[in-house]
Amino acid sequence: MKFLPTALPGCFLLQPNILRDERGCFVKVFHQQTFREQGLAADFAEEYYSVSRRGVLRGLHFQTPPHEHAKLLYCVQGKVLDAAVDLRVGSPTYGQHIMIELDAEHGQALYLAPGVAHGFYTLSEQALMVYKVTTTYAPAHDTGILWNSAGIVWPDQQPILSARDRGFAPLAEFQSPFTYEAQP
Ligand SMILES: Cc1cn([C@H]2C[C@H](O)[C@@H](COP(=O)(O)OP(=O)(O)O[C@H]3O[C@@H](C)C(=O)[C@@H](O)[C@H]3O)O2)c(=O)[nH]c1=O
Image (tube, rainbow, N blue to C red; front, side, top):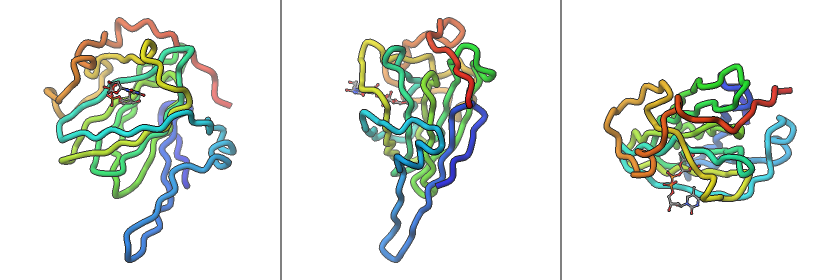
């Protein structure tokens, strides 16, 4: 597996080896020891997935302290345009974002440090996204910022959103509880 740094410190694009044969393919997305060697969190507490139809945008989500978490995510069916926004006060990239296409064909995964908001737009007829997170779901701390308030150029100005996602405050009004820890 390749660990490629992104523009956001502590966040990586992971390219697993895809082993293909006449039956299809085999992909290992997580190996605890390798993650530890790379200095990444490797004790995941929960795993979940979502299924979205074309035009759905989910995000931009995170959990606040003390329930913040690192997140490993990947697309196992379809294609999404994924985005992550740095909310860590003191980070050299505070307020900046990355955008990466993730799809089942290439199998890339994204590792996001705590304090980074995440969202995606569904480019295919259907997309199945899988997540591992290092803390369990804490509904009172599960929140977000408004999808179109962080300078991200989404391909659709009228995506399908949940009522909750439509109601989040914009980034400019968000008082971030996250602080940046310099990367080793
Ligand atoms: C995230 C989560 C949601 N839920 C519930 C709450 C709600 O009834 C239903 C759907 O929740 P949401 O609308 O928040 O689902 P969704 O918009 O898919 O939330 C996800 O969005 C992407 C962008 C992420 O980064 C994920 O970490 C997660 O926040 O599932 C849980 O029970 N446990 C969980 O861990």
